[in-house]
Image (cartoon, rainbow over all chains, first blue to last red; front, side, top):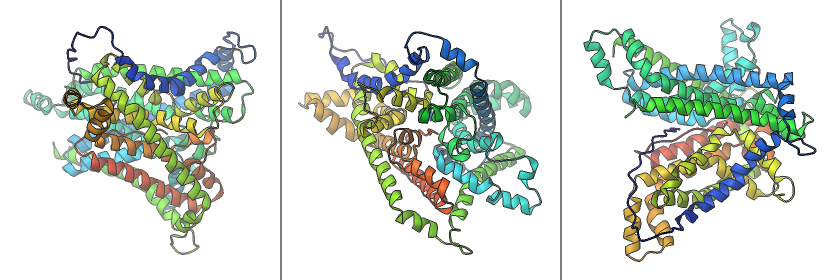
Length: 300
Length: 259
């Protein structure tokens, strides 16, 4: 995915001035109608009902307050946020190293295109099949567990389980780092070779080149991409559900069970919980947009 | 590049390859163990003769086809019209097409179910709602693919040339524009297809038969068959994206998934 906000737009061509009033806007109405009915309206009801009493429909902050006073739900947010931080940081760093290796690391050319294809597939490979793949690999009787056991190291004797925080993080990384490779690649491409040559001519060491040239230029894109990874893992549901059978306390999992049968026993609280997710995602995307603007100065 | 750098490049790449292939290898090996003591494709046979597999797979297939049709019918004319006539709508339209990235699928389906499960809007059981939902989820990919395609042709000139030869709007859209961006549409279509085939949340909570919920159910009840299905589903994703790579060679690839 390349959400580049760089819209290369030619200057709008001059239209004949004969027409005073244009009905041209009608042409985009099907789109707005469709997205209003099936995206904007259903999503905005969440925001509205978060501030409504579930019985009287009167305006209230009570749902939000209830949310903040529920240790279970605060814990769910905390786990969701921590798992997203860990996997966006880990996936971001590993994905960056991988992308840099393939693009500028002196590997044969075909490595780059095959890596991109792999990453395109892997970043799409999520949900139930992914969970199952890791169960086959790392469950107590999984392939890798057996190999490690044969080497005399049983990870399950050392506190590792696939079905809790670190196990789930490991599974999320499977779609996180390929996504990082895909979105950071343009930034690495934008790193001009002249900059390396110029700094070498001025006597800079490899470390100095990274510390004073490449890293400061890449930093906004790296952070921006990590923000996207954060959102990507924060909203993940199917993978976690299939892996843990709904036993892990993530916000998405709680929303799922609330949807199945009002487990919170309070409709309003369910809306507030959902709204909280949207707010966190909105903050993340705002951060991404700001960082993206800073990046654009250097790309192109 | 210095030699030390190349060695590190190889190390990271090999690590990446291992991370990528080990889980798949494990799944594949596991799927072959359905018969005690020997490696066999028994699990795959079991999958293919399971009537529920056929129903859920063909259901997902049909959802995918309808999603693509709805997507093409709505997003192609919109992207075309925004480029040609109403560039002032570009920003809001692009903003809306990106929203499904921002709103997690579970939040989205929560909104859909709650909105459409009470009168006067009681359409939560209608398959049309599911297709509309899928079209929304695949919108970022479909719209961007089409828009990228439109960018590469001269929409203005083509339209004016066709109109000066007497073509109607329908002719312009279906006989001029559509054939010129068919590769972009095709890549958007395959991406939508891959998304719909792997989508779990929407079908699960709108209670419709689909491939991913079936797979999820199977995991709880069987051992080897879900492994076989995971391998198949991976192959399917691979095939879809591989086709996009082949048909869209030279165009910018756009990938990412909903999880």
